[in-house]
Length: 157
Image (tube, rainbow, N blue to C red):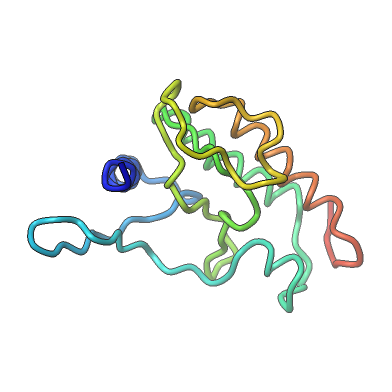
């Protein structure tokens, strides 16, 4: 089952590689051993969204712009007929140009496929147990609420 899940994740990365988007993770290749894929080689990104907001990278940023780019990446994934099913602040990284990038396609599945795991606690209230845009909408709303609720940070709305 683990091998099937990993292969499914690789297929999502390959689909994104065929139809890239600046706000979705970039697959660089796969590491193989004995004819089997053992690791996905992904582009390295600078920091997590949570580190950017809560950590030492407290320079001003535009919350509306951040949310729009995360939504754009999610919409592109939906256009490819997949839902991410685990959107949260730890699965959004930033590159050197402060571009938001959705990572971790381990829970991404084609719409209506059964899920073996259901998102990150506190970000999955209201999830359905099949791959769905609803799950991503819940995650996006939680990310939005989290960004807007950050207290004492230099956040512009």
